[in-house]
Image (tube, rainbow, N blue to C red; front, side, top):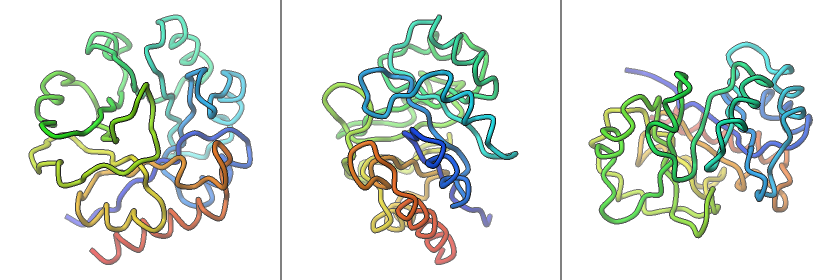
Length: 210
């Protein structure tokens, strides 16, 4: 079946970031609701930027061990928000909202995606990333060969992606989507519109080559 790889640009912090991602062809934009992160945004910012999104571009909210009140407030501010859990959340924590969600996991030797699928049966997709100290992404590429081809749920490839390596990641992993943050930044937490466009163009080129 011919298909295209979906693109999520995460960690957007300005209106310019959001516009650049949309014009480059991103399918989803990520807002970080984790205060310790340099890419964290407020609910009011996320609400205003989500209102700018055209149809079929999905806002995604990244949470790390958030309390229910924080998630409820985010859903009120951005009703169409897709939830992404990046902490130690149990299945009940993810599924209590009755909404589609992404479950992030760090891939290392012995990781079995089918085990995560069994544990989080309602996850819309599994977001695979590199192991890091603490929480969130670390901008590092993990060993893609550790991803055995046994997942039945869509996989979102993350971790150290950029315009130079995303094509190889798509060819080797064949993910449903790719997720980038630091790989489209000119400095830590500062998105670069040219890098966003280059990343999206590289994804499209990889799809065309397949």
